[in-house]
Each structure stands twice: as C-alpha cells, then as structure tokens.
Amino acid sequence: MPTTGSPTWPNTLRSAITALLLALAAALLPQPASAQGTGLLAVPHKSPFNCGKTFYANNWSPGHNPSGSLDWQDYGGDDINGETVRATASGTAYFYDAGSTSYGKWIEVRHSDGSRTRYAHLATMVRSAGGSMGVSQGTAIGTVGSTGGSNAPHLHYEQRTSSGAVDTSPTVDGVTVSLGQKKAVTSTNACSGNPHTPEEVCGSGYAVIDSAGLTGGTTYLLYNSGNGYNCVATLKTTNVGSASSMSAFLEPQGESRTTDSGSYGYYAGPVRRDAAGQCVKWGGSIGSSSYTSPFEHCD
Image (cartoon, rainbow, N blue to C red; front, side, top):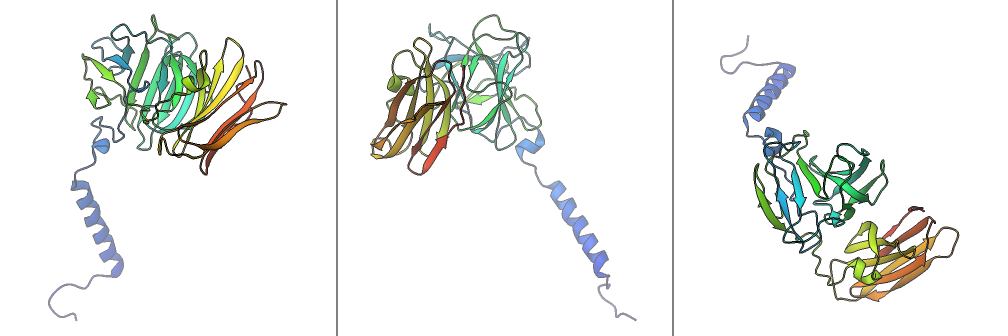
C-alpha cells in the first residue's frame, strides 16, 4: 500500500495533465495584435512614391470599396500620372491584370508577417501579369495610371492583415489616415542618401521598367521609347560616396554584352544599347552581391 502524502500517478497520465495545464495557461496569455485581428501591421510602411514626393492620401468614407483603402492623388499642382510606384515594405510582389474592370493592372506584395499591400489602376508594371519577384522597401514596381474601373489617374492602395482584412486606418511614413480623412504625405521611401537617380544617370527620355535589389543598392533597367534604347545603372544605398567594386551590364539577345565595372562611390553605368523589339539580359553588382536577369522585356 502507498504511504500517505502525494498520490503516485502513472507517467503517461502525469504528462497528459501537464500538457493540458500548459495549454490552458497559454490560452489565458494576451495574444499579439495580429492574432487578435485588430488590423495592426507589424511591418512599417513608407509612402509608395519617390523620396521627397508629396501627394494626398484619401481614405474616402463612405463609398470607397473596399472601405479603408487609400486613393493617392495630386497635391499642390503636382501631376501624379506616370509617377513611379515603389513597394512600401519588402516582400514578394505578384503581378495581375484585370483588364478594363476592377483594379486594372495591379500588384500585391506579400510581406514577412503575412500582411499584404495592394497597388491598383497602374499604367505599367515591371513584370508581366502572372509574374512575381522579390522586392525591397523602395523597389520600383510600376507607374501610376488609370486602368480598370478608374475615371482619373490615381493610385489605389490597400494594407491588409494576414487574414486578408483591410486595415481601415493605414499608416504610411508615420502618418495614420483614418476613415474619412485626407492627408498630405511626403515620401521618405528610397531616400538612400545617394544624390543621383537612375533616370538622371541614363539621361533624358529614359524611364525605369525593372529593378533588382542588391546588398547595398539596386540595379535598374530603363527604356527610352523615343529611340528604342535600353539603359542599365547600378546605384548604391549604403557606403555612398566611398569607392567600392560595382558593375552594370546589358546584353541584347544574340549580341555581345556591354559592361561597366570599376571602383565607384555612387553608381555604375550608364550602359546603353539599341534593343528595340529585342529581348535583353541585364544586371549588375555591388561587391559580392550580384543580379543577372533572364532574357526578357522583349517588346
């Protein structure tokens, strides 16, 4: 017979009771904001525009679908049509085209915490519909337009939680825009400290059509519709002004590759080639970080 005192339990029963008690304790602990479905996003977002650009963020209410989405529009006479659209946080971008309805040309970026952002009514996208690419905060992904169910150029923008719910009070660049509010937001996105831009490096008439993030910067592919030339430039975002190994290259399909490489403080390139109607392979490097595209952009 056992002596008096604590009862002796079989090991399997003791383990089961312990697991049950731990589960009950966990259930009583406060849950993270995202698990509670409050609409808060753990990923900080910047404005979807170039550094220093100011536009109105309109959180229309009622009547905007979905409720809580933002319409970015002109501010102070600055025309938003054709503006470069940049990822507000890093993640994987997926490209879609709804034609003349709904979002028109649109992109969803899925972020590390499971949340998502959407960018709609775009004039152009850096990948064809059905494609995807990894993006850093500030990566150029398209340009503002008026495709789909839009009656004037603007950017439709949404922040969604991991459950898919729209955050009705999204925050960009530290500015929270709640339902019914309209606020001017100045972008700090892609403010690398580099005084140069890929458009400046390549010259007048060139516009960014693709980009790839590198450790310490970005390599860009640009196109000039006026003369049919492509251009590649690689720009630093860290150690700006300090000379280090960099490169940029461009290779029209069936032709030789042109490369600019050296020890530079700000950028490598520009590398310009006539490639109208040709597929191109392009890319660049900063130190040991490099990117090489497949043959693409064949229009």
